[in-house]
Image 1 (cartoon, one colour):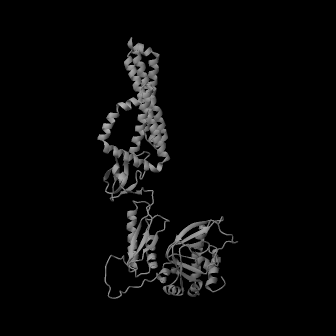
Image 2 (cartoon, rainbow, N blue to C red):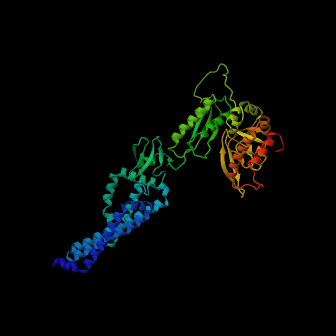
Image 3 (cartoon, rainbow, N blue to C red):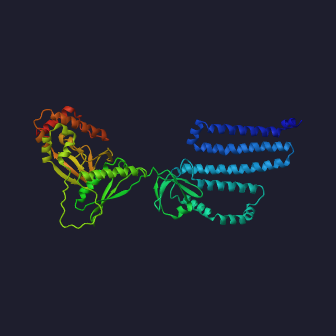
Amino acid sequence: MFSTEIAMDAPVRDGLMLAGGSVLLALIWFVFRRTSVGTRVLSCYMWIDTAANFVIIPLTIFGVGRFLTQLFDVLQYAEFANLTVTITQLALYVTISIGLGRIVEVWISVAHADDVSDGHLPQLLRLILYGLCVIGGLAVFLTMNGYRPTELYLSTGVLAAILAFATQQTLGDFFAGLTLSLESPFKLEDWIMLEDGTEGRVIDINWRTTRLRQWDNATLVVPNSVLAKTRIRNLHDRNHKYSPWYMIRISADYDPRAIKVLLLEAALRCKRSVPGALPTIRLTDATQSPYSYMVWVHFPNYQAMFAGREELFREIHNALKDAGLQVAVDLQEVRYARATHSPMEPPNVLMALKSLDFAAFLTDEDLGKIAAMSERSFFEAGSVILNEGEQADQMQIISTGVVEVSVSSNTGRRHHVEELNPGQYFGLAAMLTNEPAAMQYLARTDVSIIRVNVDCLRHVVSGRDGITEQFAQLVQHRRQRAEDAKTYVQDSGQAITFQDLVRRVDRVFRGGTR
């Protein structure tokens, strides 16, 4: 009978087994891709998904086509058999060409991970890539079946000319998008600002338009031809540091150096700036009143700039207000008498002493005596204030500016430890123990120092019971911090115990040899 003849035909049976096996393999792969395990694996290893699709899909098409061809041959439907062969060949060529396009896409995504988003190219580049692959597959199919692709080009030339004339604006957008994709003035997830002030985050680049997501969460669709003709400012993505500067105008009646100190301290208090990237303060215009000062700061990215800028302006306002100043406004005035201005005084020494940790051991009268006997020094940026290994007979309190602390390794290379800001001090341990300084102290910015020598402390604390041990505990704590930070410590023989520190500090306060 009919069914028996088919079942006994070996080619049909082999084709059925091939088709069934390939379809079963495709179903297993389809189910695996949608499981939680498959999703996690394929999201980490895109090559597995690409290679599997490149093999399984053409194999399934070949198996099903082979089975149908054998079946139509047995049923003696030669026309259907030939049509099945042709369709199978066409599907194989197109599928393989698309698979090659996917391999190229994954390679670009892996090799240029910073320029793509979510493992995919922009839509425009994907359209061009897969379009070229499909055209190539069709060309190979026509060539293998005895057709000349040039004949197809000639027969469709007139139609192509008519379509090009009718869609010249659309083609202009297409080629403009192609140019933007090749030059890459921006990529997905970048924030861009157009010449007219429009700004937004790039969420898609397709064959005709570029889509921007604006701050109000609205989507702005810009034709590629418009983008190609306008000036674009790329503000980059969340991984790109953004470093704006702001101009502050303050009256010319005040000392520029004091103003720079105030602005620097205000910028240093800005917690939203990039850690370790010091702000820069410059007097940019002193040719007219008010003077103009530039405050240059660094934020993690463009989006973080808005909150950071608010914090910076708030700190500048507070710093100027505490100093009795305000930002100058644009006014035209006629002066008939010289205006009086409150003189700007440097930070109060007594207030600086009260903020130190050892102030808890002393009275306000003691701190006042120390303040009266202290001295001031100024160091320009880059100057070494205290060298590692140098003897110190003075404690140094930072009044303004930033001091960098570093130590040297046994190879002679310097290692950054920390930065000291206004209100912190150094040199106390070296002064009270007669030991060389354990670290180097370098002025990162212009620095104003309050110097307190050992005679000041000796004059104040001599004869006090228990104060020696309190200072010794403080010195021990600071020495331990220094030893923990150093990469190596020069061998000084027997380790110094707490009792040794007590005796040394007591000898200093009594006026003995240090």
